[in-house]
Amino acid sequence: MPARKIAAGLLSIFICLSAAHAGSQSIPASAEGQVEFNTPSGNIGCIYTPKGGTSTYQPRDGGPELSCSRVEPSYVTVILGPKGPAALIKNPGEQGCCSDATKLGYGNSWSQGPFSCQSSTKGLSCTGSNGHGFFLSKGQGDREIGEP
Image (cartoon, rainbow, N blue to C red; front, side, top):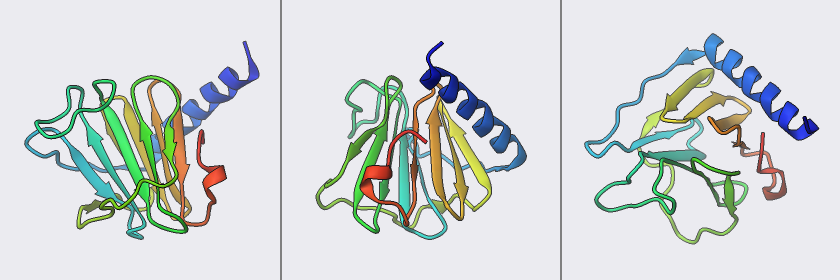
């Protein structure tokens, strides 16, 4: 088994164990199934879109999809779908981020569909059931974003 697959498997186990010890936070979905949340710092905001999308937004591959944006030190968006690694958009243009959505408290986890996220004072870590994921924080550069 390639080292990368072993590392991804161990990371998934670690994240699952970490999430089991953290407080699981329920965040209500909109009428069309989207869930929005921010980190307590207000620097990172995420939107979960269920499989099939909504009446106004269809994920590129049909979904489900988790899209998270970070405001500082540079504005980036990371999109995680049901297959493959997360896609990093380094200059997403003018987009809304970090509105007055529910805060995913530090130490808390959230999950919906195939995705789960863990909020900490260090940043936000999210993974999909396919083993791919990302980590976003205010203190990281764009080259550091990618698989956790």
